[in-house]
Length: 228
Image (cartoon, rainbow, N blue to C red; front, side, top):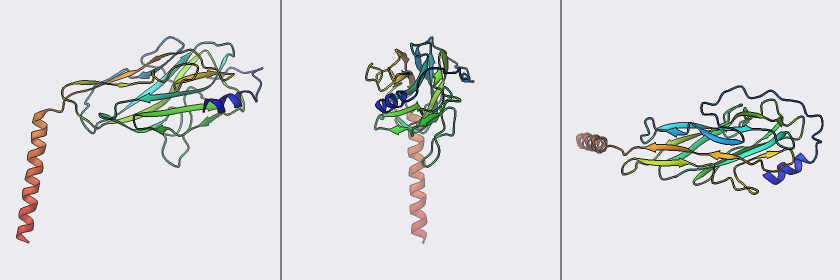
């Protein structure tokens, strides 16, 4: 993906670039540039099995030698024992669904971009976006949201556990999976911040209640079959 972005960057001259309108939304947990981070940084409300929640990845960039940003990507790792990534999409466009247009990030508002469908691996989700090679790139300094990811809680621990939503492991310049690129396709140095999901132990009382309900349904069904 990064190679393709670099090839596109070489086609169009960076001279005469115009300032682009910044993203509209405000982050709840702003980070000083240059940074990419997940909001909220801690998720702990009602984390029982079946609960779904969203997180959003943000970026904040200062000036770089090219004065622009031409692409970004993050690779978000998680523990599939407890979580499953169900959906993902850009924050500034149509939510991702098979067969639909993915839209674009809020950060690249008014920039012609090449949208990419999110990729879901066994323990990660990967989302990225690049300048299309037409018009202007995203001028910096500036900040904005990139994409959201929806998770479902699928496992219950023995006791409280903290599960990391990890985008920082993918940031290892110059060959990162989590990155922002300047106008020449080079990685911009970033501080990358992860998020924590706090999952409590599923109470034994609830497990017992569910077991009793299942047993009662099984007995009731068996009795109805006997009558017939």
